[in-house]
Image 1 (tube, rainbow, N blue to C red):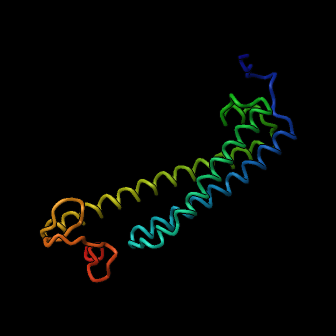
Image 2 (tube, rainbow, N blue to C red):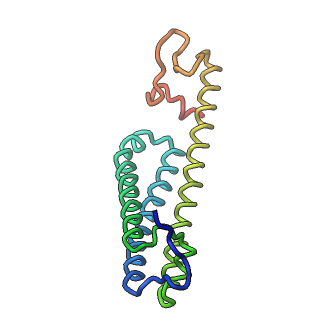
Length: 170
């Protein structure tokens, strides 16, 4: 495998810059859509909207697959241009001056979206863990032992049952 020579002799052409920025704009729109989805998911977790969460699994899978596809296309694009070994900072240095601002803007927006998604996903996990701890504690007080959610008579307790809304009592 030949080593990529980085330096003053390598530059991104106007056409390549335009194509890269246009692709990153599309990629950014995807990340904005994911951010909106995870924000809504966080709200639904807080509201114990299990039906919405179940129904949203196909949308979450669609977003995940679309993200994987876009990342694959980004890697292919950069490889076809000979920039597969370059990070965004290195690319910025060899970008035509008139495209540097747009390139940096798109990269920063994508990074911000990724950071936001990570923070919200961490919040979702923390919320679910807290809700499970509270549910377990509530069940122990009711005489229900273990994580299987059975009552003292051996009947299975359904969390989504309106007559026995364990999560709603917390």
